[in-house]
Length: 217
Image 1 (cartoon, rainbow, N blue to C red):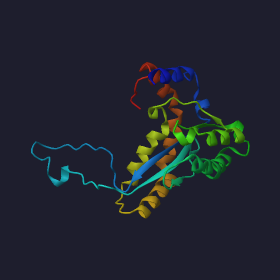
Image 2: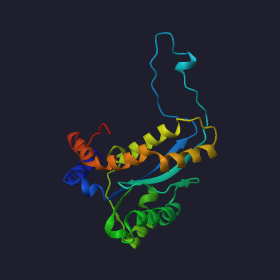
Image 3: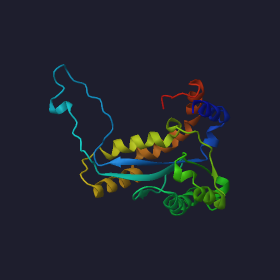
Image 4: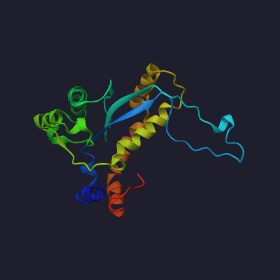
């Protein structure tokens, strides 16, 4: 994987910001009612069991899986995944979420205006999905495995989750409502879509310097 990542970075090292601005970055993410990410707390010796130094957890927290994409023009339509995302659901989502969004952003000539990025999840690279991209003449960016650090939308998911959990959420309905509000109306999200994509040359350069190993991203 390190070799493949380095080869990919070298292949794209001369891409300009303008070229990266043509790319639509996509991904799925899981968001829980309670923020289940690792958090650090500063405390004094002997305070480790005080309520202020503890974080409550739920054994089986309510979660949703969501698909989204970003371009320099902003965030895309969202797709809430019911159950497991398979190739049938994925193609349906591409048809009814991605295509209308691309047309909103770039007009009718979608094949000439953009490049689509996805990772190598099974539903993404299934025969059905590949056939759909060929039929619609949408170019898919080649992508190295195990490379979330190269995708700007991964960074945006963290920002999204921070914004979502700025207010108390207790159930799935509230979680979805908060997700929609933040994704479509947060100025932070809108600004980061553009800035993160424009920072792709730095990510690629960092991967080359790391010789294919992990980077700070």
